[in-house]
Length: 239
Image (cartoon, rainbow, N blue to C red; front, side):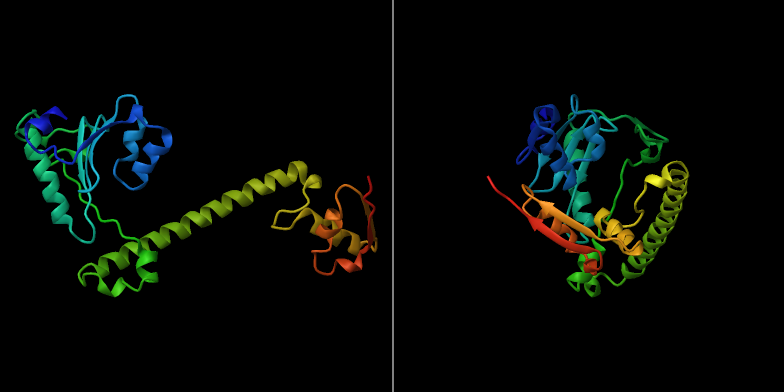
């Protein structure tokens, strides 16, 4: 914070210490990508210099000591990069960064070593489709987005198939142990299962209620075809 102030680039920035914020406030900043989820791991020591209007965040004690982030709307990656370069230049005039002549900037994660830069594009494909904005995307981006969307779809389909197989396997093991106590493995309600069994066995059901004021009978009669087993219901409420 002092380094940014000495450089004269601190206008619009606010220092936020995560330990002074509640959990809801911290997660709200992460949800809108003003801070990373990694920063939330160490709330006692983490902080962020935030210029919300400009979409610029300087996170401290995240994965590395400093992480400069800028977010811009649309496809303005260069604008976001320029904001990061401006902050980087301002800070480098006051503090020293770990740098090697051969390897470049040294970071905690080896994949970031070198320039220390990472660029990403966040695209909400469902909303673009709903608003009929897909056709307005840069023509050069459309094949890339299409390929990414197809890859995501295939990944989700594979994940769903694996999850279904795992659930089916677990369900079979549960059935082996307590199968006689399971009334349904689908979306059937207990009252539906009971009424179906009564009909199958040719039995009927009647009810007499007091304090429940007809709640039981009302629940039963919501089931289609229940008249085949529900004979009658009486409500005798009295003080």
